Length: 476
Image (cartoon, rainbow, N blue to C red; front, side):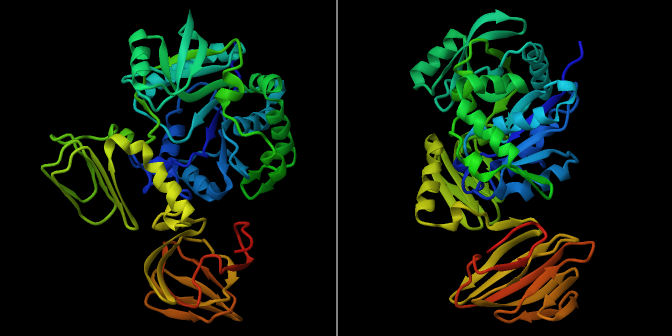
């Protein structure tokens, strides 16, 4: 039997707020290198290598992350169709848009299999994961909506569960989904042996998912079709129509489809899976010292046990600590009781209510042309380190409230300043007066690094008037 193409669908919209201060709104955990030199997103695709019929992936992402996603895909040499969500509407609409997209590209009216993967999970045993996918393929080809149930290793109260039904070939009938239980109930699930953790990984034929939406969530299907029909190409991205997509009900794949169907299948997954959903979960993926501490970065512990200590720069030392999470980044420090690591998102909520930038951005802010980081600031001045990738160009822009001084530290800078064009090399500098149109470009083959000193009455990032932009950005 000829198998249909297997198209991975990466759901890239997670925020990872429980891993603050490493994970931020504009650089969430799926893009972080938490386990090895690759990000969680990159490893999600890398672990598929060798599966039969593997076809071009589809990634559904927040438009704010589009350049970050494209760059990370380019780093591992994988091309994908990137669909941009204008707003977060949960996983069911995201997959609906991907399924509609896949069906429009299907050859000979052969709907592909969609392997639906959250982009922010970790799996240790890749061979076991691939065996589970291979076991699921016959069920999905036959028209069953298939999910993967993780064999539980502890009475976890932070996960939803799946109860299995009658045995099938290398799988079970899906009996029902179960909400997050209390500890006693979770222990009973483990003792009973017929419950799995809900992995959030699925395998469908694209047409099967769309048919299920037509029966159980027609509003989601209707808006997904409209959003795709009204989509427009923007550079390497497909922007789903804003109004149509935002009009879709927000719902998960579980609620919209899986809990309502009669022929679901669950395939057991025993592959060292983790959703990397909190600091204690991340600690379980790393090595521990003799006292049970998980340490990363410049860290020194004295008489401390079962702690998670993570430093992104400066030395962090602990004395007499137990069951504590300590995370230090250049702009924030988190100290938490390890047993309450799931509550870190409340810190993020409080930061957002206070309009604190620490909820949104890392110390290093990534842009499609490179990145920048704040070095120093005070009344009416701010100093930044700016790195521009080879061949990259910032927007042609001006500022109403600030002037800028640029000093080239490394590389070559091509500067447009009003009617002038300057070529600056290391240790050379220029001054951009307030209100003057300007642009910075790296014409060289190595990173351009400059120090920028801003001065003026207002130094916010929204004081940018873009006149031209290579990346399709408008406004501030």
